[in-house]
Length: 133
Image (cartoon, rainbow, N blue to C red):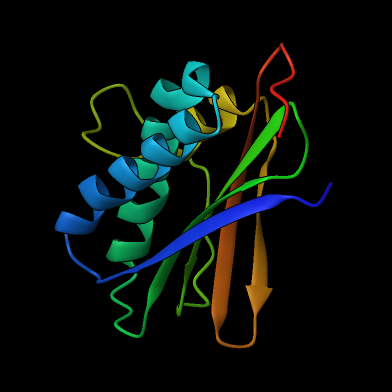
């Protein structure tokens, strides 16, 4: 069976963080993968926030994909070629921990695909029990 995919185009603004979170969480519930909703909400919030910070104004595409019965891939594409970088935030820093959190929640299964018009950042979550597609 082919992978299920859903996506939405969002503006570059703070309102898109909540919209992306609602979109991804609703899709996961529809697919019967509610156990991943909390982690997915944190991940998509971080990835969308990073896209907004690039200052790019062309477009932002948020997607969710089910490549297997165990796996969900969250994707955020934008028009910026600026690559996200995971940093070691100081204890007193007020930001800079987001990608480290994504790394922990996905067990290192995230990455970036550069494109001619920008990039797509993806993060994979897995459920211990298969959910038929």
